[in-house]
Every structure is written in C-alpha cells, then in structure tokens.
Amino acid sequence: MNLTQIEQQALHLPEQERAALVHKILISLETLSAEELEQDWMIEAGRRAVELDTGTVQPVSADEVRRKAQALLR
Image (cartoon, rainbow, N blue to C red; front, side, top):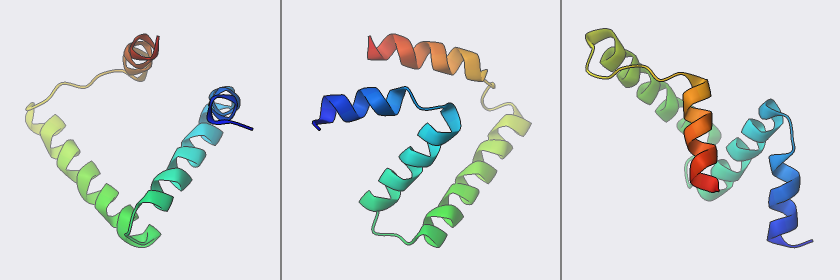
C-alpha cells in the first residue's frame, strides 16, 4: 500500500477516528511523552481561551474551518 492509498482510506474514516489517527501520528513525531504533549495542549487551550475571553481573537465555526481546509486541499 502506498501513501496515496493510505491517505485516501484515512480521509474516509469518521471524524473521531481521523482525529485519533492524527494524534497518534503527531505523537510518533514528537520527542515529548504523551503526558508532556497533553500538558502542552492544555497550556495552549488556556492561552486561546484567554484570547477569546479578552476579544483578542474572534471565534471561527468548525464548519467554516472545515470549508477552508477542504478548499486548501483541492
């Protein structure tokens, strides 16, 4: 199986399974442990929450993000 075939199969997985796959692949590239990576994501989530709360950034809906991402992949 080549990369294109793997990609096509992965893109047809349900959203939660794709997210889990991405998580596993990212962990495989990181030198951090899963716990350290989780802690980093929690810090980032907190930072982003502060930005939303203070109005520094405006929220973007998941549908809009998905639409823009799909447009970039075409």
